[in-house]
Length: 230
Length: 346
Image (cartoon, rainbow over all chains, first blue to last red; front, top):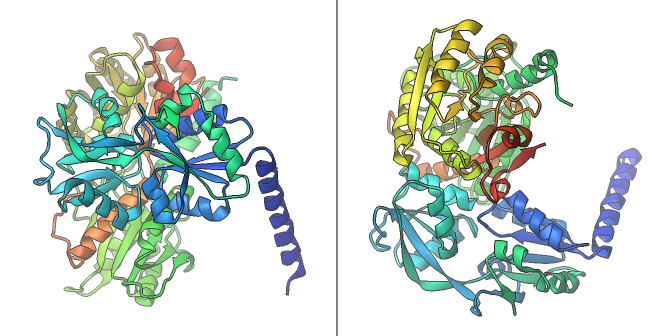
């Protein structure tokens, strides 16, 4: 056994543990896996500024979510469908105008797309390949080929480059996407609703982080697509 | 502190050339050199895997990001092995990797890797059946789909339509006419981009220069095209981005009044204080890996068959960098514009 390697590994582990304790002492760690109409850097910065003492990490890909969860977190801010896929339970549910859920729309060019007729649809990669395919099928009631993207802004190029006939998004993103394009975008609101962002406790400082998130003010809440918590 | 032009030539332009050789800036294979030793960079193995996917790649920060996206997606279904290919001379490494892993499909990253694999294909007997190959990070791939047998891929250049959509989110200035200086060799590429960009009511203004223009020729072309454009789009063409041309043509050319934004495709070309690139739009390499993985899943559904002349996909996801001091001095930002930029240089 190489003792030098063992001792340097132990030292590295001690540093990591100390850093984690330090983060937890300061108010805990919040992992954010949420797609927003702003860049991930801006989302993380808005939340970090509003949550003094909490270490906020925003990720945009399911692979990064899995890795970050394994590294250890105190709370996770994401969509309830993501919690369900990971065996987590929401402790704090976001609301908008009193409702815990929101509508989704299918967006196409020139005319509102027919959910039953589209053969290729773009969607945010919320749950990985199989999970996202199932989510899209459930929302549309049909089984189109699904092109997954990792950012809200990447939905528009799928239409611009004619990779898909329509893209699926939370209706709240439509105005933002339409405002950035000269294409004649048209939306069809779907009958099924989906829960708004929520917070789950996953670590020792989870309750403290959940409490801090519940006190978030207007600006940060708006980025998340909610206006209050339950 | 602002860099002087001399410093920019010494420091900045060398970075630019490094960026260019990371996969952009050149038509066709470019890097030569002695062949390297066989080296497996990464491996993901799982029970019940559907087969082996071999990734041939150089070891750079950008290719590692692509590997992350690829392995996150494919690692749940396939065994993956990444083998280092550093130069186009690494044909024996390609052969060894293929014999050792017998992949159902391969991923080729970067121009020298594609050149080494193409050379390997040429060295095989006629009628050899090659595994399906997906090419990424290779410059100006769009328009040359038959660069290898049984191959397809994703272009590396960010489409102009995406570039301008990103810039419109940030600057309040109207963006309808986009100027570009190009060599004759890139006419087809630019015209395909112009056709796609027309969907967003973008008009492309072109000025052609010779195959190896001198600074005067390039500067004149820049002056002419900037006069009729709302923004200037700089192609990652290393024939036009030599250190001499950057210092003697581009830098004086893009700083002439009236000012218009300069859009570049290499991060080192955005350097606050030097006022070259206003805005860089670059591939999101991790997302590019995810996109390549999706293409591989699609190929698997088609029993790994690639039709000859298959369409090259365009990259969907980008990252953006902004020279904030230049923008504040010369242009008007939209409200909330900075929340739409990945990296802000101050």
